[in-house]
Length: 493
Image 1 (cartoon, one colour):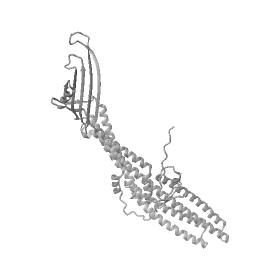
Image 2 (cartoon, one colour; image 1 turned 60 degrees about the horizontal axis):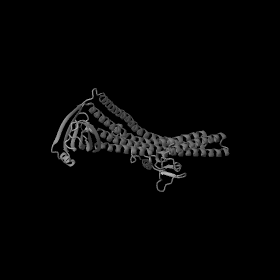
Image 3 (tube, rainbow, N blue to C red; image 1 turned 135 degrees about the vertical axis):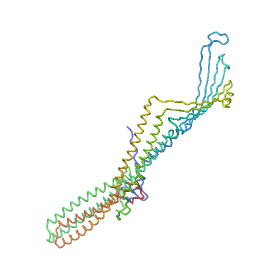
C-alpha cells in the first residue's frame, strides 16, 4: 500500500497576524489577489509545466551537439593453407589483430552531417605470403553528407526545435490564462463574500425592525389600543426574518470557504477557523464613462486573450509539421563528400605519420538517390498534417466567435448593471420614505401592523437589491477586463 502524499504546508500568516478560532483576517481585494498569486496550487502546477516546456525546448537543441564515438577490439583466427616453403598442405596460418577507432560527428542545422574519423588496424600473422609478420594500417577520413531534397536545409532540420519553442510559448500563454482565471475567481469570490455580509447586515436590520414593531404592538396592546392579532402578526414576521437571517449567515460562511480555498490551500484547521473580514467597500462611483464599444474591446481581446494567443501558437506548430511532412514525401537525394588518407607500415608510428600527413589523399563525391515505392506512409502523413493545420485554423475561428460573444455580453452587462444600480438606489430611497410615512400614519392610528410590516419588507428588499446591483456592477467590470484579456491585480479596484 502506497503512503499518502505529504500534507500541504500551512501558509505563513503575515507579520502580526494569527490564524485560529476567533481570529479575524482583514482582507482588501488587492491583498486577496496578491495572496492567491503566491499560494494557489493551480498556478504552481502551471509554473512547473512551464519549466518542463522550457527545459524541453532547450534540450531539443542537443540534437546538434557533437557526438564522440570510440571503439576497440581484438580478434584471433587460424586457417589451413599451403606451406609457402614446401608447397605441401597442412600449414596452419595464424592471424591476430587488434583495432582501434574514434570519430567526432556533428549533425548540422542544414540537415547534413560532418564526421571526422581515425581508424587503426594492427595485424600479426605467420603467413609467408605477407610482406611482414606485423603490419599497421591507419586511416584518417573527413566526410560530409548533405540532403538535397528530402530532409534538406534548416527549415526541416530544426523543425522539431521550432515546435518545442512554440510549445514553450504556448505553455507560457496557458500559464497566463490560468493566472487571469484565478484573478477572476478570487475577485468574484471576494465580492460574493462582501455581498453575503451585506445581505446578513440587511437581514439583521430587518429583524431589528420587526422586533421593534413587536415591542410597539405590545405596548399598544397593554394600553388597550392594540389587538392580539396585530401582535401575532408582528411575532410571525420576527420568526420569518430570523429564518432569513440564519440563511444569510450560512451563505456568508459558504462564500468565506470558497474564498479561503482559493487563498489558503491545505487542511490546517486553524486557517479554516479564521474569519475573513473584507475591507474593500462596494463601489460608490457608478459610471459608464470610458466604457469601450464592443468592437474596440474585441480588438483588444484579439491581441491579448490568452486562449487566442495559445491557438496561434498551435497553428504555427501545425504549419511546421505540415512543412516537414511535405519534405518527407519527396524522394531522397543526398550529396556525399569525403577526403581520406591511408598509412600502411610495419611500424605503427610510421603508419600513423603517413595517414595524418595527407600526402596521398583520396577524394570522393557521390549522389545517392532513393525513393520508397508507393510512399504511402509519407503521402498520408502529409494529408494528416494538412488536416491538423486546417483543424487548428477552424478552432481559432470558433474561439474568436465565442470570445466576441463574451466581449459583447461583458460590455452590455457593465452598462446594464450601472443603470440597475441607479434604479435600485432610487427604489431604496422611495421605499425608505414610504416606510417612514407609514410608520407615522401607524402612530396616528391611520394604518395597520400588516401594512407597516409590508412596507418594512419592501424597504428591506430594496436595500438588498441595491447592494446586490452594486456587487453585480463590480463583478461586471472585472468580467469585461477578463473578456479583453487584460485582467491584472493593478486593474482590479
